[in-house]
Length: 287
Image (cartoon, rainbow, N blue to C red; front, side):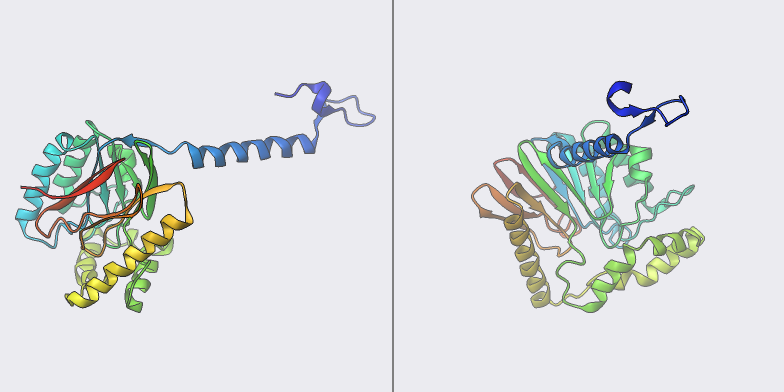
């Protein structure tokens, strides 16, 4: 990019090869950093124009009929939209080992891989299945993020996040969010034999998140989540859609003109899902 006459100086008294001036190196580095930040901010991946959203199936802790319905749904999802968002807690527990694929989730993982061959798939980790590692992206071509992802739905910038750890009303749920997000926890769990790890997960399932059945408490959690989404939209004028899960409460709300909050509800609760476009969102049930 720069010729020797512009940015190279021979070492004094040596006649040796030219040295590259440090200010030129700093300039190139600054240019690269600026280019990267602009790319991250403005070149968001575009998924499509009709996004199918499903969340909170908790497979492994629900009757087999829930899994069977989801497999049928995944077989037909390409007819419902042109992209798919799995927004956390697809499994009641998932861990991506280096050489082992969990048997209980194998059929659904294979079905997601088949979906990805037809349409783009984005997957977000929830408090029950955040430990996806690189399995989803490397082996199945699915875009996976353990916390959140930002992408464009047609012309609408969209934030997808499961929602645990943001508006918890009990200290234990916030603690579990920090534990499941910790690199140290992941490293320690990987050292455990998979059979032992899944046995422990079964024992810990009830404390991986808020499992209360108190309707009033769940309603308040949903209200707090809605308020978080409203504040996030207010803080980022470029953002047009916030998609969350976790509370198992189905909501679609236009907070401002053409700016929305969406929670599809829980798949295990009547096979709920949603379809979002640039002009709106619709709550649906699969049958």
